Length: 99
Image 1 (tube, rainbow, N blue to C red):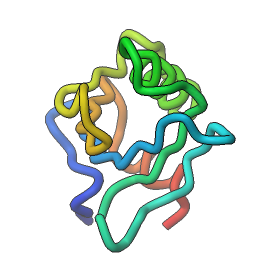
Image 2 (tube, rainbow, N blue to C red):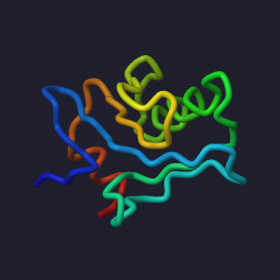
Image 3 (cartoon, rainbow, N blue to C red):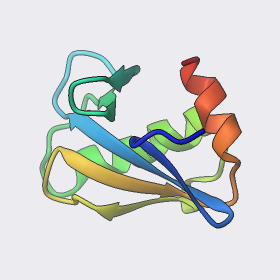
């Protein structure tokens, strides 16, 4: 099964994220059906990569992987991001969302 917000890429997965920086709480909300992206909020402002660093920490903790295995591939300066999680199963991420 394939979803546009979550794509298998070899031994990795790509997650398409809509990030809300400078939020009142840090959270992974689930899939935004309209954008077809995983909706994630972080506390940090989008200044000097702070929000991106917090996103990597949040995703690594949520997926139970090391931070070095979470890479922002696209969207370093925008809310629309493509994040690669290395060496993880598609099914694992899909189960975390509970869709």
